[in-house]
Image (cartoon, rainbow, N blue to C red; front, top):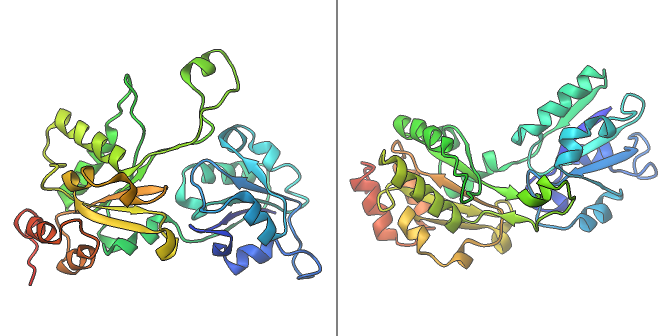
Length: 302
């Protein structure tokens, strides 16, 4: 059996009981459940708030790190003998929170390997912590790091579609793990850059830059309400939520947004007064938050 198991968002204890029992209990702890012969930890679409060693200690299993090349180019190695023994791939959040994971499930099916998916919380549902109602969200978009010569803006069209419908937009910020520089890639050298995680200030700067080029007025710095979230699921010790306009977030101290991973929500025009009131608690400037909601978004507040 090949398992893909969601780990949730925070630490080693976020795994579900089902996920733990299926793949990590030692035989003497639960004789009815066979432990997996190999357990891989996918380590490039997201990160937990603890190191691998914490996971291994809690789960009682040695974890094999699976980077992008392993998952996308060497899936046959992950699936090796999975038709005869149990193998697990652990992913941060929910197994279907990234486009990569359905691909390896399809590969398993083509090899006639039985599969099972064990779900967990992800940013796609936990983002409700900011006070916005999940059924008011439109398409989720990803925002990648710009370079001097590459500034893709297709995300802008998706945001515009959401804006036209009055829907909120969840913007997932880029993660660079085990990436090569252009020079090392061209020379075939397996030398990797340090990990990078896009921050809220970087994201806001890029959004405003594309707005200045496209000029559709969907991301007006002073009139667009946004909510920044970081380390969602980490509790009071780790989780941060900051709301305001794009310009307010751009001028806010970077440390106020907390440690990565960061995500950004662009508030849609169909926002409900209760959503505004809930997110007001996290506002940089509560008075301006309410003013923009009333005058720009047409939200009727008491």
